[in-house]
Amino acid sequence: MENQIADKVVVITGASSGAGRATAFELAEGKASLVLASRNEAVLEELAEECRKIGSEVLVVPTDVTDNTAMHRLAVKAFEWKGRIDVWVNNAGVLAAGTFDEMPWEAHQKVIDTNLLGYMSGAHAVLPHFKRQGAGILINNISIGGYVAVPFGGAYTASKFALRGFFESLKGELTEWPDIHIVDLFPAFLDTPGIQHAGNYTGKVLKPSPPVYDPRIVARSVRASIIHPKSTRYPGGAPWLFKLGHALAPEWMSKITGMLMKGYFKIADPTEVTDGNLFNSVNFSMSTNGNSRPRLSPQTKRMISAGLLLGGAFGLATYLLSKRTGTV
Image (cartoon, rainbow, N blue to C red; front, top):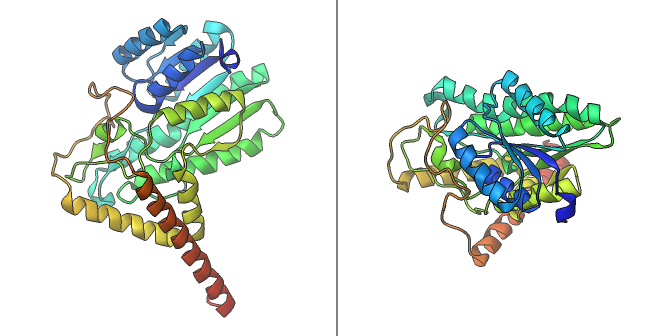
């Protein structure tokens, strides 16, 4: 497996923390040639040195994914470094939480610029190189938020739903390029510092909704996607269940999620409103894990799974009954 990773030129955006950082370590162990990108150059240099100690060659290119010119410059520098780009990992992302109409419009716009246009910009920058080579793998860390809405995270949800549609469109566009692969990853919530870096306009301490997974599951999915590219992957077990629940009962899923979040805000500890890392990089919690709790016990996982399946079954039964009675 390592031999299939060794010397691959891999660009990773959002590499300074969370899933991007975990992916850098995962691929460094396989001796990939890494191009690390994010806004925080100092943290990238520290990460690069750690990856070099593991045995990987590393190029650091400070990049803001909301700047299309900078993204094209990233692609050019990566290509000039080794004469090719084998893999591009779109990973940089931000979150802004709060009541939609009470949040600054600029916060919504920044989420869209980063999460949606940043990924599109990555594709726009790297595809000419892939086409020139006749091959390449574009991996997108989208999240299960591409299927299941996140109340109080409207722009985040809009960006993730849009990403799923955009890359489905692009896959259809690239059918004449059989050796250019697009892989979409849909993990559930990850234990990363992202929740600590979020723009938080709720006035309450944010915590990720369970089940919470180690970001290394995304890193392993990236490695697997380099070795065996496939259109979609669902790291961890929960994303499949969330996707099924949404497919069978989308309205039920949205209402339940909204009720759970409103219930949490009633008991959550207060905190100051902050823009987080929306407009500028931060210099705290720049690690792989965010030490989020709680993680789920096997019993709780089974309860959630049963609830999602029952809700989905209820939604399907309601739909079939409505169709039979002519109310749909």
